[in-house]
Amino acid sequence: MLVGIVGKPSCGKSTFFKASTLADVEIANYPFTTIKPNHAVGFVRVDCVDKEFGKQCKPRIGYCVEHQRFVPIDMIDVAGLVPGAHEGLGMGNQFLDDLRQADVLVHVIDVSGSVNEKGESVVPLSYDPAKDIKFLEEELDFWYLNVFKKVWEKFARTTQAAHEDVNKAISKQFSGLRVTENMVKDTLKMLTLHEKPVINWTDEELFSVVREFRKKTKPMIISANKIDVPGADKNFERLKKEFPDYMIVPSSAESELALREAAKHGLIDYVPGASDFKIKDETKLNDKQKKALEFIRANILQKFGKTGVQEVLDKAVFEFLGYIAVYPGGVNKLEDSEGRTLPDCFLMPKGTTALDFAFKLHTDFGKNFVKAINVKTKMPIGKDVPLENRSVIEIMSSK
Image (cartoon, rainbow, N blue to C red; front, side, top):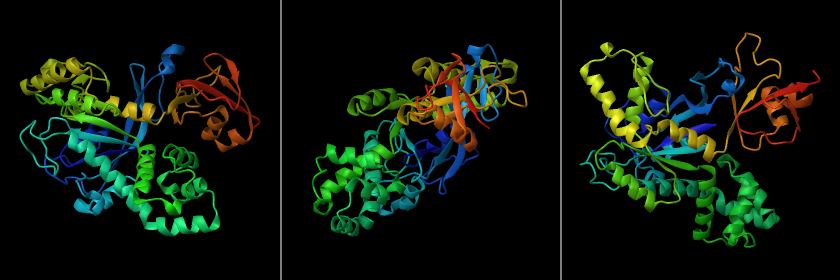
């Protein structure tokens, strides 16, 4: 799974990425600070099952704080996109191609309206952030259209001449964009194109198809960043009404980064995504640091409940992509050979069965599958039964 962070220059995109990963990336308030894409590991948050067993887990990968399990995910931060990116403006085509493998996109916008469409600083509230929501989707749609048009004419003639099944042909041709056969079937039926030969599709019809594919293969959640700027909250409320079908989360990447850095250096106790923090020793903080922390508490945490960064990632993975967390374990033993309790937690697609999970653990477990047991209930599970979120599963095989 790969989460892509996108947005125009200077909107706080790289700050969001650094706050999520604590990766060493350059952050500056000028366009195109990021040129090459940054890759790093972020984490999504799960209510850990260890508490239900009266234990403290010890993750092999990731970490667990106050029974909150943080499971790793891959993240990529690409350079800022500007209007005309699909035509190559601002090296746009290169940056769009960097997003090809992303499963879900986090669109970071400057909800305070203090950066114009080119990523240049302007007076706060003087620029309408609604333009950014519209422009980015348009750029992504035209990017997809360009990919399709490169081969579409020849593809349409060949498919028509060979009397191929349209659903299979399109999904095969564009599998690189993760277009599936069911996706094609549903889209063509919705647009009433399922009975019309592809060779007779108009440009408008092709664009409608492409737009639906983009929505399905690159679902997008919006991080309304810089929510702490005075007046930004009013912009946020307006955007929610203007874009009711979008998931828009108020956020302050700068605040989240400050809290995570302070926790990293032992100044505060803070669990990412929490609604508050605790200062460990006030004598170690100078006046500037104390004021900054109090500003975050009063203007972000108490007003919005959280900084929004962790919430965005959690929603992207669990709500948009529909992933579930599954732990391997044993009815009589939750520890591995090195004594680590519940060492692993896997993010699995919705609909994952016990047999799917067995193959995830090891090919031999899948090939020699005998049965699976729900460790919480100690009851057997059918191999084709979909697993639930936060399941703990014991797999038994013949070898």
